[in-house]
Image 1: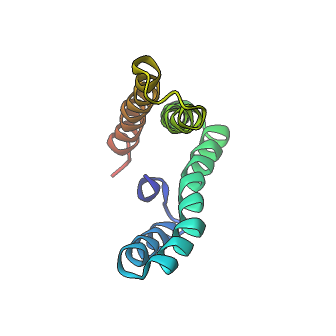
Image 2: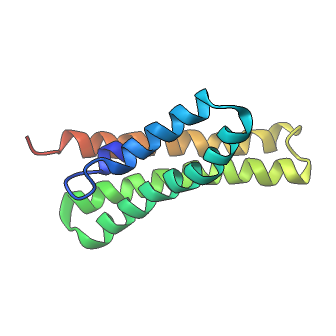
Length: 126
């Protein structure tokens, strides 16, 4: 997702950072990989949201609509994860209805996010 949103200004620096962080997480000892995860994962999670939010605010027309669809997908996906964390903390994960709420939001988020990213890629000028 980050690779799709990066263009001329960043020269794919965030994507390279993410690939290096992922490589370090899989190839280093547990304590180092934990430290890398604590630093890199929040950055690589929040950064695409900020980039698409900036695009949605500054642009117009179809580009704005695509960015808004991606943002809505991200929000639903994050809601799914946060709801699961909240329900797990409160001890409701073993209940059938409550254990279906989190995946429901996450699945909707994945589909909406995928649709928005597909729109972004298909409308990209050659």
